[in-house]
Length: 98
Image (cartoon, rainbow, N blue to C red; front, side, top):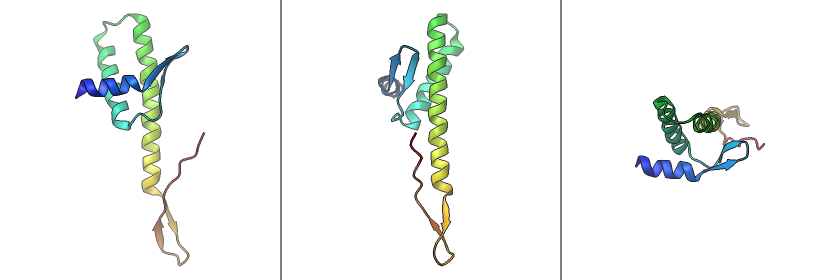
């Protein structure tokens, strides 16, 4: 299972000249699993400096991705609007593009 998550996470990240870019279609669960792997690898302290830095950069990207997904989920849960008759109604949240 962990290997499957690692393969999914690794397949969803691509190397760029500036480091590792995390694709936004990565699920929250897969991103979190990969982040846990990165923390474990960095805690081990055995990786060379360049590898550690690349893992750190990937981790920062994954944290941002997870935070964005959590923020979007929170907004979807919280959006309530008053209908024509003053009653509360649930409205779907559409995240801003950009």
